[in-house]
Length: 432
Image (cartoon, rainbow, N blue to C red; front, side):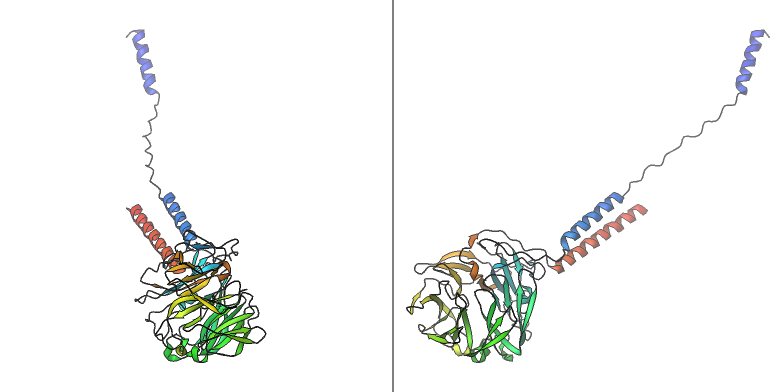
């Protein structure tokens, strides 16, 4: 073997003797699993946001509206989604209107306040609850008797269900209700607010069990005229005025016109009274009858063949205006039957479905329309008489406020159930 060959063999052996480490097998990284946490967190945030929007804190009192009030050209229709004045007060109103109960038990009556902005609608819930008689729960009936104050800030509510024990005063700015007691077992007829909205006139008589919530028969015979001072809460009975069914304060608040039977009396703050002759078949037109200048009274013509006034039942058949200084009455050209107030020399009136402006001469002009809906009918319409002189009529939209509490709770419950169902489905998928 040559030297070169031997050298190559030695180098080969040396190379083979050098230890060569074994390469480690490749490391297989696990495939990242898809995480559902961001999705679940996002869903939880959505649910919380929805819950925050549905379950609201009690609304803060609303400041009285400034400037001219707005009367909506078309009043919002009936809706069970209208927020209540006690839950979400919207401030002073330009009007209230009531829906009578339909034929089915779940079609309950409602009394709605329209805000002075013409777009906020709130249900006067205490009037709706007091509307249906206890002894005839399926009887078609309106909301409880109610009367809007001239400034639109308060609503007086009586009780149509049976013998009552109070007159409720609802503050539309705070949503609070203050109850003023009346003799137990009474029937109450709300008559008129004073122009400054500080006094309320109403009649009280012993309740008759067969009246089914209608106090007129008892009041026509025994109703005593009562004055409530809202500042002090003190009530006083006006002596010698029994059987009063209608009343209206003069613009200065010093005289109260009352209808007793077929007689119209002017009761003075000093204690005296005078009798005003009425045209045959006419009677005082309710709490908004007295004109702002104090010279005129709006009258309602009674339809021929109406039941005796002694029972408190009668049907309207037209309107007229009585000039107090001259004693001359003038019929008006309108089919409206209920007086709402005055706008200058024009009388504001309604036939339930429309609100009209009636000039001293000439035909009435339609200002606004109401729409019943849901098989209800318009039972009452009233305006805040201190706001009618310069109000504007326009389309103002509809704001019914937050959903009623029962619907908010139901919707939130359904959202939570849906979220729980999604979470369970995701967990099952993860296990698989």
